[in-house]
Image 1 (spheres, helix red, strand yellow):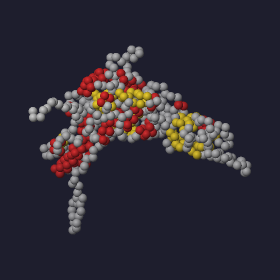
Image 2: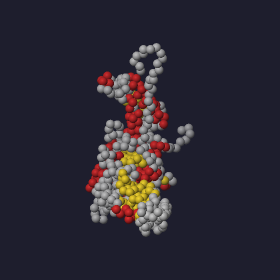
Image 3: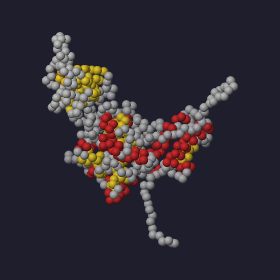
Image 4: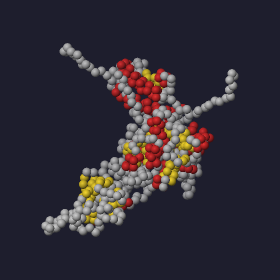
Length: 576
């Protein structure tokens, strides 16, 4: 608004008096922590990487042409694939390694990258020389140092020497010749020209690639081509990243690597630095427990950290949830062949075992959820034969699917888990009567009703007597409302704190909540019965305004799932 007007005329001023609509945030982005087959491209070890499709996951965490799973049956690939199969969209993946801690690192010649011919047959294998590899199996790879790359270029035979007779004819260019350029980032380290796959080539025509690169300070090369002419065995032109030897964590250091640091955005803590991640799982926590790399107390320590970080989202409201997996353990009976305590196969975990585990863990939180039992899925690394895996990834995919198809207010239950071939244990109704009040959500087999497998639970890990936060859908809906209001009202900060602002804020929040009521997220026959927004002089006194504070009180009545459907049937005669 202009302060003064000096000349006669018409002045047009633009005044912002309306309320700004609040746009709901996405609560359907997941975070995964675990082992992967590889870490390549833009992905970095121990740091979260955004993945939007299974194909993109393979680009970052699978070897070229691979199925993306591991030879030691890491659970993370199954969880991420289950996430996408069940309707999950965008997620973040943190790789904590490509080998189990303490395992024997593969020989350097077995790492690296394989380059194919134009007919997709093996041609050359490049690997990093151990003496020059800054990224060894005994040290954490540097994220700041670009990986070595090999560039294959078109080339020609060697030109005729200067003292060649004038009537000499140059060698025939058969198309088999190529150059090899070794790069780190944009820096060219080495260049080899006029190469061929022909071992008997004359040196005045070209150089055999293996012989020429023996002098390289950075890479080794091996001829893995099959029989054929040099042209058919020639590697395809392109840029190829050389995979360094895998990082193998020391078992004593692994717990620290898994935990990570928030400041560096590494490990489990690092994924909490991704603001859009609203649900988190670490399925390979079960793998390291099964392999004896972490005991049950250490597993509980990681679970406790995940729940505590979900509960603490200062300065904004807490909005994340951790989906925990029940360890495959039989308390008091899990003795191995040497008489030492250890985990047992998941299919031997009975309902009383998981109940005993939760009592031993003894951690309650409205920001956590547990599903039982483990699920049976196909294992591509074993000819498609089944394997039992933790259900957290599949369950979070169902959360996302329900958000998209029905809304965040709908309990993610009574849904069919996709990609599931069976269950580690068929829980019956009496057994679920023991687990459900404890907050353990069962996956049930309803074959007798011809309904297949169903997720038959929707509870958080909150204390059983805290019924206000009993259901996953209620907790996530309130988090959705809180976070959406927080982000959608940033424009209010530093506005003049008067009754005009109070009215605008009230309208903004009321319009947002009314949209939720119309969508079915809030209970009540009218908006007045479903929510209220209060911002007046009773809340905002002169003293609070002097302190620069604006108070808005919001109350909502979320819909709750009909967990128990009770029909009361009696005989009835007309006229009685």
